[in-house]
Length: 331
Image (cartoon, rainbow, N blue to C red; front, side, top):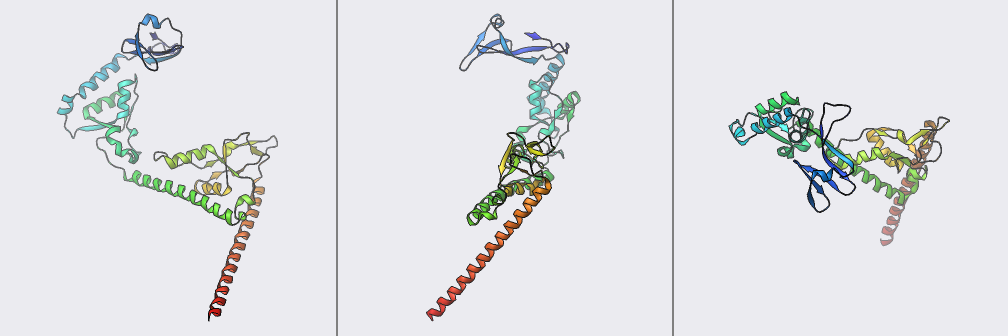
């Protein structure tokens, strides 16, 4: 089954698989088979051609040049060729790219940055899998593939990157520090609420803050996956739309998390960005209005903190006086 695309008549494709309404058919070498949940049945091509398919899978036909390249690679990677090649005369190629070479009609340029850092050394987070992610090949084979497909870079030795290793260790510490500090903040807020709700912003600003779910999802991926980079600055701009009067308001069903303002300030102190968005139905306050509301809340929180400190001091003094009286009575 051949097909030639209308927009590029020089490319030929084979129908590799098709999905009719009653099963799935695929080609293995030159034979056709039916696949279902439990059995595989060989079919006659004439039978398959009678079926109406609603999904077709095409595979680009291999050209003779590509087959000659693969034959050359097989010869140069044969046990005899490897045995006759000096151990010091080796280059390393991405195993993933070699897989594309063996299965894709066009593997594209060699991509050794699958296992290399920007400094052309081993990626620290993948170094323990080095025997899997890159393959040593004789230098003549590397030259042949590089001349044929381009790409790179050339890798004749594998070195651990001290620069990227230091950065990776720094990111490990950053992940732990940010997660631990967030949990500590949550515990601290619970203790403050038990002591006096007036110590929290929620007592003075009833509307919680909003945080982009997309940004928070990126932060969670960074915390949980060593291969993920830190998120950029907070971007809450997608949560807002402009009213006809030019005022900002929340989108209907915004893709956001409602969080205590303390949480928003924690993330904002690390990553910056914004804007600060409040979970209210109407217009968002202007910067001046929001700043005034926050200023008054800060003053009220500071006053409550001072009141509690004064109360604690008075209680300590009363306890000391009571102890002194008890000591005198015993005498």
